[in-house]
Amino acid sequence: MESVLAPAILCLGPDGLETARRIRAGCPDAAIRGLAGPVEDAEIRHDSIESALRDLYRRDVPIIALCAAATVIRALGPLLGDGLEEPPVLAVAEDGSAVVPLLGLRRGAVALSRIVGAALGTVPAFTSPDEEEVKCRPAEPRRRGRLAVIGLGPGASGLMAPDVREELRRARHIIGYETYVRMAGPFRPDQIIHASDNRVEMDRARHAFVLAAGGEDVVVVSSGDPGIFAMASAVLEALHLSDEPSWHSDVDLVILPGISAAQAAAAKAGAPLGHDFCTISLSDNLKPWPVILDRLDHAATADLVLALYNPISVARPWQLGEALDLLRRYRAAATPVVLGRDVGRPGERITVVTLGSLSPDMVDMRTVVIVGSSTTRSFPRAGGGAWVYTPRWYGQSPE
Ligand code: SAH
Picture 1 (cartoon, rainbow, N blue to C red):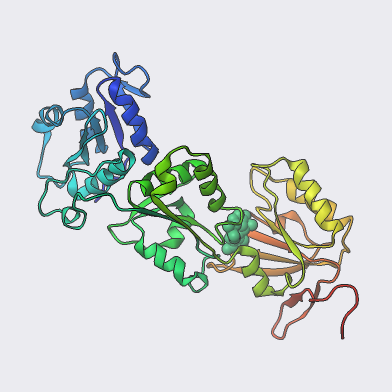
Picture 2 (cartoon, rainbow, N blue to C red):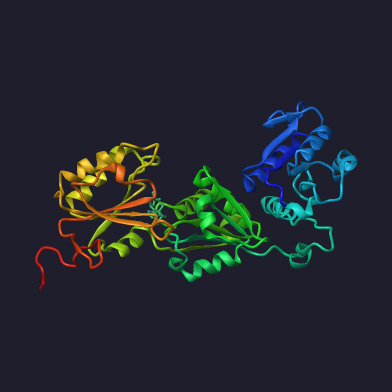
């Protein structure tokens, strides 16, 4: 069983602090720990390196020790068992020039060494001859890394593009929001999952580049399409803002599209996006609410079909109601609205209502809302429910 705890980066002196920070760029969960005296900036402090090492080891915390291997061996020697229970323990040179996995090779030390090595631009010194890693990754000139930003589609495996599936197969590291990473699985034991729940997108993007610039194959996972309210923009912004030359020159960056929620929901309901439409996220986390209202106003004035993403959440309970009030000023109460919830996932629900009857409590954050234009129509389907479509023409029907 791999150790599941976040690693501790132990600094013996101030010289290691810079290296500790570089390691953390590739390992954002790790806490930096130091000695009370010399490492004033460390987040958690200990009085002696030996007692810190022993304490972490006993608590099964993976250890990245920025000190001599001998210091670690002397501290932990008396505690060592049969090798099955020990957490990963790495000795790393203070200047970041060497990474030596010492213990816990059967519980994640190999993967952790690779991550630390990638962050420091160093090939780990694997010393165990039966370690599969040694055979498949000899210390040779660094290979180019690959960073693929992929869209999984809405969820159903049949809606995932074959190229995306191939990227998932070849990737060593999988980075993304936990729910989407789970959707992308199952993974092989040699694949390293970096699932996060609340980490900001730019941190995830930079983490991906650190790994890829170290020669690793990395995928960054988004649901739907990665370019629609998702990770591709953050990855490109991280690259654009970075002054790290290797991110530009040593990484093959590709962005692979996926079927977006609005497309998947539209197809289930018929063809509501058959004429001009726009997508608007109702989330005011990253843009001001007045901007959203202004865009809704323009889209409504222009008689576009609207696909509303991020329509509502516990933290944003009132915005959808206000948006609907605005749309009702321009659109008839009979305008068809498609609610696609968990499209392509277990429990999928497609509901067709009218703008007049729509209330925010019919919608949650797993729903995409498609509001028709003045030409969007609906008619009953055999077997129940309704078809919704927007004709190709506008103004006068060619028929
Ligand atoms: N990149 C994604 C969108 C991410 S924004 C895409 O292209 O689909 C997250 C919002 O997308 C959710 O709040 C919801 O409005 C919508 N969404 C994503 N997946 C969905 C699904 N399977 N069913 C319904 N809505 C979904």
